[in-house]
Length: 348
Image (cartoon, rainbow, N blue to C red; front, side, top):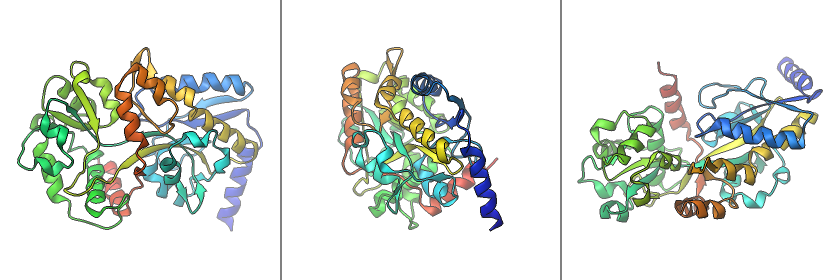
């Protein structure tokens, strides 16, 4: 009862005034400063009397978002966020133009009929490859390369990437989007290590893309945003999903979600909903996707921006196909994998 009283008092403190609103963007966007500029420019037009204050908060490392009204987090942590009581549900009717958001993305952040935020960005582990390489162009499974060595540039030893590859492998092996059962992935992980060009196993994702762009290998595993690091090989490259096992690929997307925290109430809660809709606005996302005339190759959770983006760069046709696949699922971390992820990210 004492804990409940403290929580209620804390909520009351933050609902009486809404002259400022605090928010945190996803830390790993290509250009968060430009995104902030777009958000705050729009906000001044619709709510000039409420100042926005941006806070740094990393959903993977920083724990409870104390004193922040709106956060953006990776839905892989949805269970942790909801079970810890750090975010609260919103009415689906509060999402502006919800029909413009891919249904799988909204469904993926819905638990027991309650929606826990607005999906904004999508991401995944894709195969980006040179179209001239017939083996990669025709491949459907990583195991198709079981006899190959050092064909791909892969950042496969990173403690952040590797648990993701394990999750991908388990999903494809078990045929379920968010596996909770344990499985032996040693063979696939060993194959990934075998396929990875040895000199670049420990590179950052940006360096992996840059190495491929310099002419190394026939392709690489990376997110769509990594295409912005390609220059010489961009026009001859394509992007696609690929199974991380010898079975059917379970189409899965990491999803970045804007959510209202448990501390926001009353007027502050309503304004937080308004800010979340600005963060997920189609015009703002379209502007963010092309900055200074250069595409960022973001995968957006909204449908409407893709048509115009494809006119600026044809590869957005492929990105739209990836985002629009009706078989997509939002990645929610399995408990055993989340535990391993926590061990890795807390390791010195």
